[in-house]
Amino acid sequence: MAVVLMVGLLLFFAMGVPIAIALGLSSAIALLWDGNLSLIILVQRFFTSIDSFPLLAIPLFILAGTIMEVGGLSQRLVNFANAITGHLPGGLGLVMVVTSLFFSAISGSGAATAAAVGSILIPSMIARGYHKRFAAALQSASGELGIILPPSIPIILYGVTTGTSIGALFLAGVIPGLLIAAGLMIAVYGIAKKRGYKREKRATAKEFWTAFREAGLALVMPVIILGGIYLGFFTATEAAGVAVLYAFIVGFFIYREIKWQKIQDLLASSAITTSVILFIISSAGLFAWIITREGIPQQIAGMFMEISDNPIVFLMIVNVFLIAVGMFMEANALIIILAPLLTPVAMELGVDPVQFGLIMIINLAIGLCTPPVGVNLFISAQIAGIRIDEITLGMIPFYLVLLTSLVLVTYFPFFTTWLPSLLL
Image 1 (cartoon, rainbow, N blue to C red):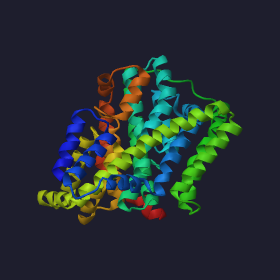
Image 2: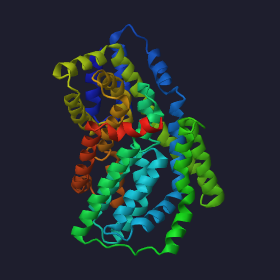
Image 3: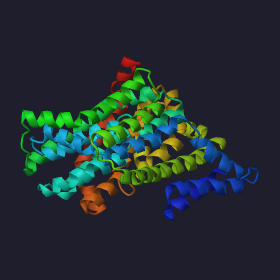
Image 4: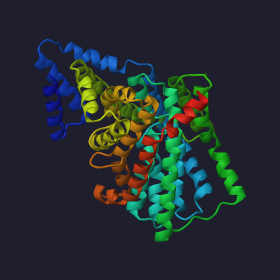
């Protein structure tokens, strides 16, 4: 049954079948092949895979991010970031990283971050003389902050599938996210100095205050979300509901950029994005149930232990493996499939599950901006109007930043465990 499952999955991938459908079809074929299992299990597992209160946070955070984009909060974050870093070499590139940092602390999605910030800043950078390849590649790399910083949707999935504290995982993502953002900004500064990219005009004290005041309501949103979670006022799912309500009140009643005519399109867009993610989760849940029933997790654990019981070697192998598979599969599906397999092995070797969760998330975040199926690459390339091969060349210096950050997080637990141990 396990062989049929894997062969079917690989064949569907080779045929170009979408990941969610490939997972579901290969699982259905495996059930039929077994002969002793009813296809009713398919429906049951599809339902139980998404019948989870913590997963309700996913559609709510997606809706909150969409409301932010339509309601003008994203543009105000860009204006504030420009007031902070726009006057430095590569100013608009630095603005892109800082804005992505702000937006990531609200949206929970790498694709949403790349689309919302990129749609504003990529055209602006190109108009001011930045190379299209540089602007698109930078946004692709910056967009991955959306799944590393809280409230990350993949982090929620990892916490649900492995039973790890979502609050601790959220805290663990803060320092790695800031580390990657700092690395990207250093790379942008160096490239801009070398290529002579223009600076923006330094903001006056009045302009800075105006930008800060206008962005203040957007900047308060992460404080409400994370502060409410860690002070015990509400869970991550309830925080997502609060984020939706807050974003709507600000966008509709205060900024007045959300019109009644836009609400239907806003809800439809969020529903489509949510349905895609939940379909992947349902299919991956069925797939994971079958491989667990077949004892594949124990076989994988034994395979890793045979190679080496040294945690340093294990983590190195896991990093290479996750980067490789992350190039071909969607991050949310991979977490549901691989986290229950790899996390117990890591824990047996003495690796903290919170640290291992962030190692997985960062690996899969790199997959967002690597060909052939990197979502951020496609979004940024489409906005910039260039081909995937062009943007991939521009990614080379940013790949170095991401890989360096991954090594630091992998072999220095401090980056992921210090903040949770301090505050929790």
